[in-house]
Amino acid sequence: MSDATESNGTAGAAEPAGSGPAGKRHVRVVLVDDHRMFRTGVQAEIGQTAETGVEVVGEAADVDQAVTVITATRPEVVLLDVHLPGGGGVEVLRRCAGLMADAEQPVRFLALSVSDAAEDVIGVIRGGARGYVTKTITGTDLVDSIFRVQEGDAVFSPRLAGFVLDAFASTDAPPVDEDLDRLTQREREVLRLIARGYAYKEIAKQLFISVKTVESHVSAVLRKLQLSNRHELTRWATARRLV
Image (cartoon, rainbow, N blue to C red; front, side, top):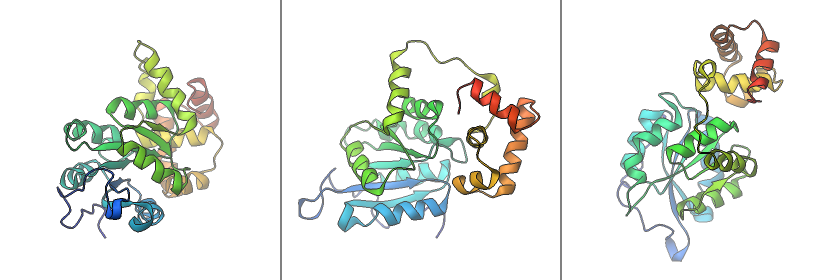
């Protein structure tokens, strides 16, 4: 199976939102995540359409694939990872702005990410996502969140709602952190986990990457921030409230 999987003949043939066999609720979903194992797990958890009402009509592993599959299948809801090759979830949202604005058949986005950092949450919500939940969510709650987003509700994991309220209650734009902007999304993710005391093996397992890749990201972060070791990284991240 390739990393980008489109539906077979379903593009443009969606049933009315919320409808399905025998009046059961039904929603067409695209999964966007750069980890194949995670997509497979989500598909197994929520994609039993007869039981959940969720029909997974496509998958993608990076920004370009995501835009292609979403445009072709026109799902009601996209489960969108925040950190993706090619520009991240925010870039997918930017390139799908027209689909989100379609009054007749809007495509709605629900961020599903391992990250619970305020800047990630605020970034995708500003980009147009209808909600943000973390990957610790249960299958039952994820299905419920998908249907709520399909119906136009905003959905957040409890701890994350405060980030959004605080951000949009302020009229001032958040300050630009030039040091943080030097880091890629993946480097920020590794930095946060390092600052929380995770070992390299634990980070690799959580992010579905190799220990060698974790080491490469840490080396890149140290170089870009001109720091010497993980203890300095932890102090740096704590001072910026990234932990």
